[in-house]
Length: 132
Image (cartoon, rainbow, N blue to C red; front, side, top):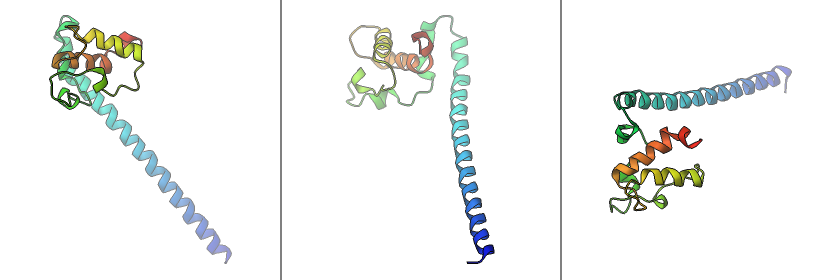
């Protein structure tokens, strides 16, 4: 091979690597911006709900954004959700259990529709109250 052919192969390889790295960086930034935008929109939409409430008991918990709805989580359709129905692997057990207990207003060990959204609010938006 000639020296110019070797240099051309090296140059093409460098250009391809740069394009791949630039694409990965752009993809990562777009993905992060989408997450921030979705969170900002959810917070913005729901700030009216919070600001119009005089106490935390008056928050419309269902109006916030959650990855799963009550209907998605209540897979057996009995109108209740238990801890075993939810995937909460990234929340410490003691804090998860406390949030669940705090949300279970009738203390029956399971969450109805309203209690579920109260729990999801605590899990997604009120984590600081639980030291997270």
